[in-house]
Length: 230
Figure 1 (cartoon, rainbow, N blue to C red):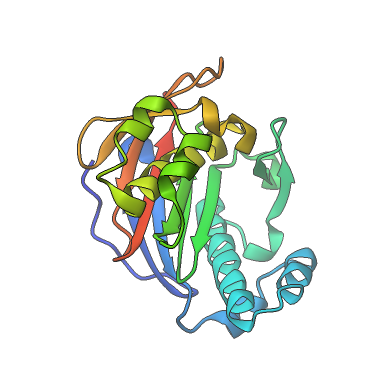
Figure 2: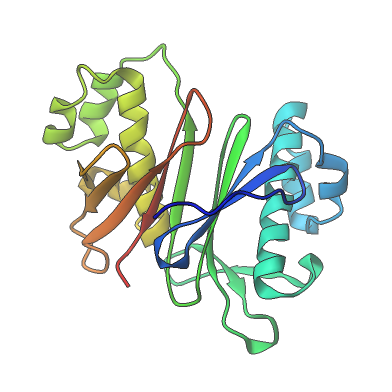
């Protein structure tokens, strides 16, 4: 479970780590250089979505995050980034279209403010990842009562907003791995096993129990990686 030594990749300030089951995670700093170079890697649809963002900072972050995703997946598939095709699987999750009929990895992208995470799992596996900047200025307990299980809410009074977002990232990563969607978040229960690991339990017949690993991204952020059992 110990990550390998990180190494730089492009575009952006990117770092990679390897976890159990061959799942790889790249950490991408979105506020560095890389947007002009990254723009050339995007599809026409991605460029349209970027241009629709009114905030220049958010537009730049979108470009760097999606260019990093394409760079990572191109390396994993051994094809140029421009040859990558994307679609949706039966549950609506983004997926790669197999180039030349070859098996393709599963992947997931998450970004929040200055940081993004790209997770890639071997063909046939699934993965979900989520990163959130810890924000205050809201009633985190009231929000937890709306979305979390009672035993989770009971753990939060002393945990503050960071505890709220810590659980949120695990739940969000789970529904991204499973394809359950936001409507399934209230059915997800996170049981912590240690400072770095937890288990997600759900009434989902397909993925009733998944592994969680919380990731250290940067001060002021929480993040989680979820992998269903093989």
